[in-house]
Amino acid sequence: MKEHKRGMHLAGNIIGIVAIAILLPIFSVNLTLIIKSYAQPSKVPTVFGVAPLVVQTGSMDPAIKANDLIFIKKVDTATLKVGDIIAFQPVGSATVVTHRIIEVYEEDGAAMFRTKGDWNNTPDITPVHSTQVVGLCFHRIEGAGKLAQPKVTVLVVSVLVVLLLLYDLLRHYRNNRNEKNA
Image (cartoon, rainbow, N blue to C red; front, side, top):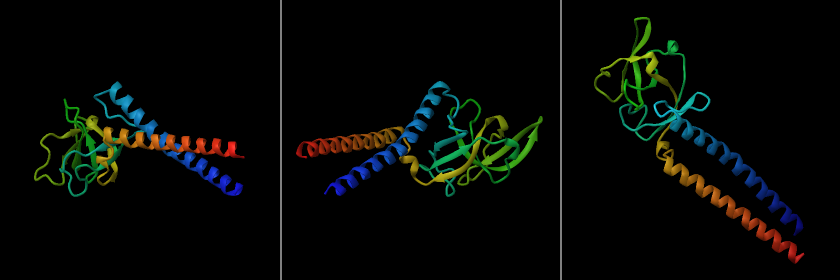
């Protein structure tokens, strides 16, 4: 019986450690992104040069759909080529657009990009200057944008924390009861 209790205690400790190991980085990354977004509202917040973005429209369908979660990374704009999917901020806008490069050229010594959404019939009217490029899209998680919304993230993390606390309280209650019965 004692072996069983020790095994359960060990399993509980392992579950707790794994839960904390998962929750702590998620919490840290989210907190960093939130703080950066308030500190510099006109810039896309990044962690280690990577930014998660939730796609709002279907302009890149079928490659990227609305509500997909994409990850972009900062890159040297000189390495961008036709076919790359980039995120950029149009002049005077806080919105980030994610479209495919269909032409690369130089103007006044600066790299310029003609872009187009895969779903759109025509290219974007205004070319993208290299200084407007936020990053290169390198990964997509289909539909995960629905879960990455701040309210959902807070809810999920809160539920996990409450469950972890309840589990810990139950474990302490059982340990105290077992010590009294021993």
